[in-house]
Image (cartoon, rainbow, N blue to C red; front, side, top):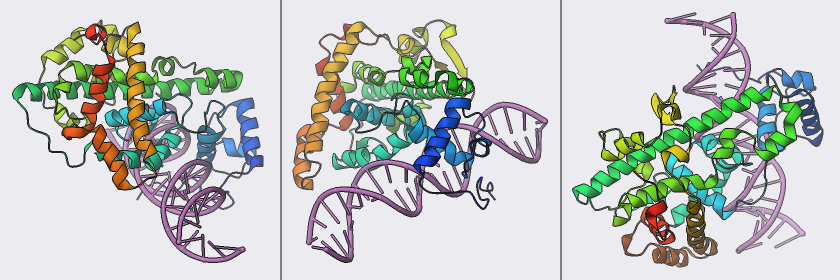
Length: 338
DNA sequence: AAGCCATGCAACCGCGGCAGC
DNA sequence: GGCTGCCGCGGTTGCATGGCT
């Protein structure tokens, strides 16, 4: 079964794009916008299928694309968002301005996945590979359940935001030629502007404040599947109560769940000092990443030694991050309230 | 210098979701 | 409500490049 290939017609070119083709595509989109991708190749005089044109535009020709090496902050954001969203590259990409989902996906597969593996962390679950987490007491499990519930919320919210971004882009597509450069370079999309790379740290801080640092905290994704089994908890009650009025909530038709869309302002209380705390956190997490990076090309064993140093006494990946959060937070008064 | 291998990245492919009819 | 076509996403492939032997 399956759909017939969109461009199986003879005469349609495949493979690498030539500068001439790029120029044609660019010129056409700048003048007319892309409109229907299906019809674009003919109008633009290109012997390509619409799909190929869309891909070339979104992944390469778009003026807002930032190329080159990923910064450590971007890496951290990717890792953290991947822990929440899994392989939701488009959703992750909405939180990394100027990066495409394809680029992020490639970077994950070629760099970050390997690095996490080298750190002894399963890149899929973001848990230590030979994880032998103690079952802990009831409180610990409860905290884990609460926090995983939170992670589920955050994950759903991020996806909803990503969806809004996509819809917004669709709406603006028709007028793209009038604002091409400005729109893409300034990230005028409100949803996209709201969501800075540091927002994911809110979740980490929340985990921290919910006793995760007490040890044995699982990664969000690792518990997502079980989160649905968690009943209404104090935490989630607070979450709903504190999420502002009902206008802050929107119904996500795909996820069939109610999701706070006003970003961290409603989901987690944020304060100006959070940025400072994040900066401090980032510095320490950067050191952690760098220590791995510096051994990236070295022997596995030497690299492992550094990793062991970073994760001594069996503390897992998330504990380390959470400890960094704690250490970076001189006062938890500014932390999310629940 | 040549061959081999690993890596990175651009591009393709197939599928699912959604909207219009 | 079912069908069809389009778009976008995620997985995968294949080529280019650089490093090593």
